Length: 562
Image: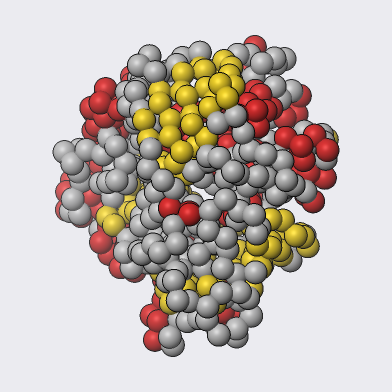
C-alpha cells in the first residue's frame, strides 16, 4: 500500500507468482453463513451501528483513483472486485468471478462471473459491466494519467490507449471480450503473472457503469497535487458490496448502510460509521468512553491495559516490513563495510521488544516469509558490536557520524511508534561507536518528501505494507529502479527484477526471486528489522471481525451484542 496519497515517485509493481494456466473454483467465504475462524456465530443477535475509528479521512470514495489505506478501508465495504482474498490471508480467492482460467501463454484470462449480482443502483453486474470498467481505466486521459490518480493502474498495466507521454502509450492491457452475461475474457499484450492477485486490490473494484455515467465519474479537474473529484467520487460511489453509501461529513465520518439485496450474506449490522480520529490517544480514549466500537493501529504500550480491562485486541498476520534504509549518496554509506557494520550493530530482538507489538517477527530480508521467493539462506548479519567496530576500522571511519532520520506525528502498521524505534536503534549504534545526529520531521508532508524526494538524508526508518502476495510488490517497489531514498545505481539488480517481473509462471519466478533476495542481502541497501503485526482493538460487545494481513476486512459478519 502506498505510504502517501500524494507526491510519491512512481514505483513499478509487477508480476506476482502465479501459474500461467490458473483455474480457481472455490466459493468466496463472504456468503458463508456458519463459518468459523473469528466470524459471527449463527445464534448471535444482529442490528445496530458499528463505529470504527480511522486515523484520517478517505481522500475520496472512488477506489480507482485511490492509493491510501483509509479510502480503501471504506471501499472494501462498498465495492468488490472479480478477485478477493482468502479470509485471513493475502492469497487470491474468487469474489465476483466464481472461477477463471488463464491461457498457457499468459495472455488471456477467462472469468466465469457470479449470477444474480446487482449494483446498489439496481444495475445488473455482468460481463458488459466488467468490460466497461477495464475500458474506463485504459482510456483515461489528461490529469487522470497522473501518478497520484491512476497509481495502481499505471504501475501494473503500464500504459493507456492514448497519451501525450510516449512512455505511457499502450501498456499490457489489450482488450476485453464479452462471451455471455456470465463469461468475460481479458486479453493482455504481454504476460503478467501478477494479474490475478493484483485484481484483489480495491483500485480494480467493479463499479456501476450507470452511476459512473450519470455522475460523470471521470470529470476530475484541478491539478495532480490538488485534484477536484466528481460528484460520483464524493457523493455517489456505487458498488456491489454488503454496504451502500449514505453520507460523508468531511473530516468527521463516512456513514454506510446495509444493502439488503446483497448477493452474499447480508450485513448483520444496520449501519457502519467510519469516524476520523487522527490522534492515537484520542482513539484509545474514544474506545474506553464507548464513543466507538473499534480502532486500528493500537500502540504497543496500550495493548496490555486494554486486554486487562476486558477489551478485545486482535493482531493481523504480519505482511509488513520495517527497515533501516541507507542513502548511498552519503560517501561513507557507499562502503559495504560500513553498511555491514551498521547491520552487525543492531540487536533486532531488542528493537522488537522495546518498540513493536506482540506477534512481530524478526526480518532476515525485505519480504515476509509468506511471500513466494522468501529465501531461508540469504546472507545474515548477527548482532555483534565488536565485529561492527572491526569493520568500521577496516573502512577507516572509526569516528563515523551519521544523520539518522525518523518521522514524528504518525503511526504506521509497520512502525506504530517511530520515536521508540529510533531510540532503540540509535542507542545500539552509539554503543558500537557510531555517533548519531537525530533529524526528526513530521510525517506529512515533510518526512516522505525528504526521504523519497531528495538526497538530504542519511540512515532512515521506513517500511511497507504489502498490497498482495507478490515478491515484486516489495522488492520491485524498493529496488526496481534508481531512487533518491537509496542513492545507488545497481544495473544488475534492476535487470534481475525486470526479468523476474516478466516471467509468466510461478514455478519459473520463485527461484529467480529467491536468488534476488540473496543478491539484495549481500548488497545490503539497508537492514530489514522486523515484520510488525498491526493490532486492532474492539469493545467486548463486538464479534465477527476477521483481520486480514492486507486489510481486506469486510464488515457484513460483525455483530454488536448489547
